[in-house]
Structures are given as C-alpha cells and as structure tokens.
Image (cartoon, rainbow, N blue to C red; front, top):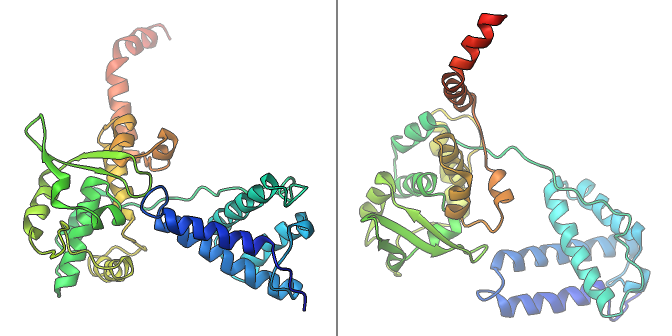
Length: 308
C-alpha cells in the first residue's frame, strides 16, 4: 500500500486547523464542519479507489475530480446540492495547492459544478395559524412550536434565535421593540422589528433560559423531530424543518408587499440575489396585483375597447 507523506488530505488538515482557530472570529462552525465532512469522504474515496492513505497533488487530474463527484452521488447517495457544496470545498483546496506551487495543472478546468435550484418550502398564513394553535402535550413541544412561530414572524434562523440575548432587544426611534443583531452566518447586522406575535413570545419565555440567552433553545435535531409531530397533528402533510420558518417569513413579507430591498436587510443578506431565492409569489398575490393593474389602466382600456 502506498503512503505519500503530503498531499490533498494533508492540506485539508492544515486548512481545518486554520479554520478551528478562526471559528467565532472570521469563520463559522458550520464552515469548519463542512470541511471536516469533505475530508472524511475524500479519505474514504482515496482508500477505496486508489488503495492509498493519501493522494499527492501531482497525480490529481480531471479523472480524480469527476470520480469523487460520481462516488459521492452513487456510493453515498448524496443530494446534488450537497455534492455541489463539497466539490466547491475541494476546488478551494486545489486552488490553494496551485497557489503554493504544489500543483501544476487545474484538475477542475473541465469540471462543471452546478447548484440545483430547489423549491424552498414555506407555510401559508392558514397553516401558520393552525400550527400556532396546535395542542402540545409537553414543555418541549410547546417551546419548539413557539420558537418556530417566532422564526416565522422574524425571519431569524435557528442559530440566530439560539444566540439571541436580552441585550439584543432594543426600543428604537419609532417607539417599537427591535432585535438588533449580527447574523451568525454572514456577520451582517440585521434589524428586525418585533411584531405583536414575537413580542408576546419574548415576554412569555423571558427568564426561562438560565445562561443569559433569550430562549432555552433545544438542539436543531430535537426541534425538527418535534416539528414533525406537531405538523402531523395539525394536518400539515409535508416535511417541515425549523428553517422553513425563515422561508415562511420571507414569503409572507413579500406577498404582503414588503419591498425585497427591505426584506434583504431584515434577513441579513449580503446580496439581494440571495433574497430572491426566498421569493414565493402566490396566485393570490398575483391576483391582487392584477386587480391593482386593472384599476390603474381602466380608463385606457375603456378607450381602447371603444375603438375595437
């Protein structure tokens, strides 16, 4: 069995070590976790396909790249967008190697890495109301239900709700209460006004967390498992994860006329194109917009119709 001392896995190890020192400053734990996962999959691929514990950069070609892509799809049954994300990380590692003179060619030159646009789920207004009033049989179910509803009325993600502290709540210039906080993922400051529903939830759970946070948030896995129980109980027959709350807020806001520029700021996006992914323009909203259009051009239509 060959054992090359330095190669792609060794550079992964170095990069992971750098990420570990940067978590909480200029890197997120999620990024670190993704690099660790790719490193694990790549190690298994090299071991199985090449009977090695390492792959030197000088031997990495297009066949290696496309082989890893195919292996993740077939052997690991990973979703297309998971493969897309993992291959993006491997490409970054190869770019580092080329910049350091460890690799002479670009093995990704002929590789096409595409992100597949997915239909982001959301709850409509009637479903939100049903979930908000569903009977709960335990403290955890009530808490998770309320946290999801809080997300659906603020647009905050799981990790941002978990990190909320009392000092993030401010009464601002307009006399209303706002959440002012940097997003964990992008580090962009986000300001979200607390509407009546989330404000009530803040007051309801105030003091229940013992570590200075606003809510006693369970693990994301626990939240998603509990949501499956609650959504089934209130007749929602599709898969709902905690992140659907964020999508729900975005959809609700757009359908109710909130400008996409304002929504982008509320969600803490660095690029408005990211916000456009959340846009779910329903038939009802299109119908309402067409009514306004019809009213606006009614006189012109009358004139045209009279001459037809």
